[in-house]
Picture 1 (cartoon, helix red, strand yellow):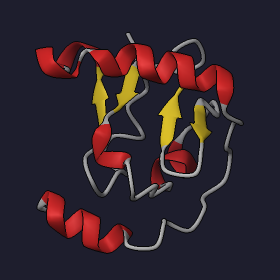
Picture 2 (spheres, one colour; picture 1 turned 135 degrees about the vertical axis):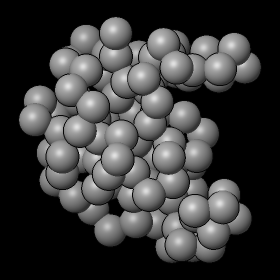
Picture 3 (cartoon, one colour; picture 1 turned 180 degrees about the vertical axis):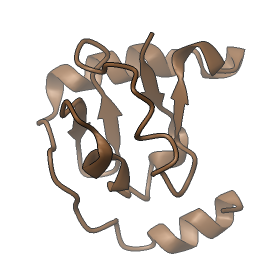
Length: 101
């Protein structure tokens, strides 16, 4: 199994999760991060680090969120790996509040 970054990350791009990852499985673009399922070791360290609850274990994904498995896998091939924390996007705190966190 692997972990999956869902839509809650869009527009926030908090990277607290990246700082917790022991294997550098995260990839980043201008709007969010993704997890490379081929690198993720399913340690779970990233889950509590995410302030917007965007990271879910694959087997815990709701039916309507299953598409995120493929999105993360494909995006990991297109975007660069990230190994260090970055500043969140402008407006990230507003997005977090809008999500209820």
